[in-house]
Length: 424
Image (cartoon, rainbow, N blue to C red; front, side, top):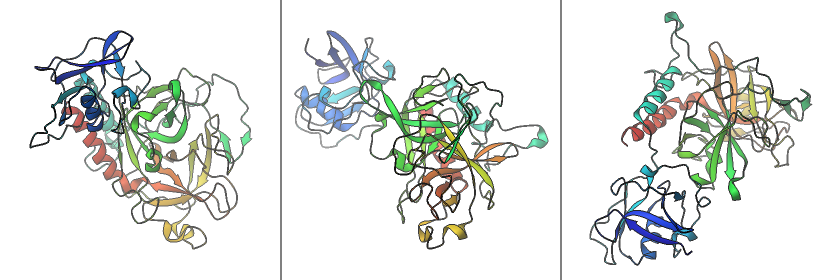
């Protein structure tokens, strides 16, 4: 049967909850990333060519299937189903997120109503309280961003992993090119940002690192080029091409790319906060990492660990099938700012780590992943894998985001994301 659309629950035929009939059954459209372009395409297709307004939580929830999610239009389509969207019936929404529209016949009103943001996610107050408590536990809401005092017997619940996890699949612990196979469960904050293809099949795109039950950090350049609906985040993963019971997939609700990304130099301020649509539950394979104190020093030659599913050979873009890790020394700014290394391209928000010979290094696909250093009370995120010239080349060590320079910015974005949810 043909696809049909209608507006229900409103006082007139030109406004109401958007419903679509697919395969003979009426359902709704989720408001994730549903903006003015999508609304205008929809209203135009029903013969309303005037100003369009998106209306939230006014016309009541639908009761049928949620047929469409993550709709993205160019604006020249004649029907909504011509736009990009998830597979019919695939969604991560509930009926409180049904799209509501108010269309006008053809004469725009004198004042155009700016639509509200519609990509905020619905959460219960209990979930918000739990999340805030978790953020407090790892120091994200402490007034001065300091670790909780051991003098009063408190410990930060972050940066912890279990040493006695048994692998579901056996494999030799041999050395591999530019790193070693990571021990399963030893990097529970490691996430993979994956791009979605046809049929919901996804593939590794970039790394990320978990800092709370719904917030991650990654490299800003990892989020360029695709809309939010094209990505998903996987936690608890180890074998990229084997389904594991520890894996948890979550969609991205929002992200905050640093406002001065690529300011002055190409990869400056290469950091972003990613907000998950639903919080994840912590377990042996999913844990948040600790964040450094502001001003925390990175001593030269200190050994820290990088991890990821990136390429194991320079010039090859195929990601690794298994999580790998490597230990690297921190390099001084004086070394990295030499003309034959990176010169003035290295800013105060960056640092180098690795070796000056052709040795261990991060590579394509590792971007956005963590550089972790062991602190007294937990494994701590000091760097985010950002950029470099080639992989494992002499005099070209990896360049990392200096996380301690951005703790205030991270806190600001986390607080903002929580405040938006409290307003729902």
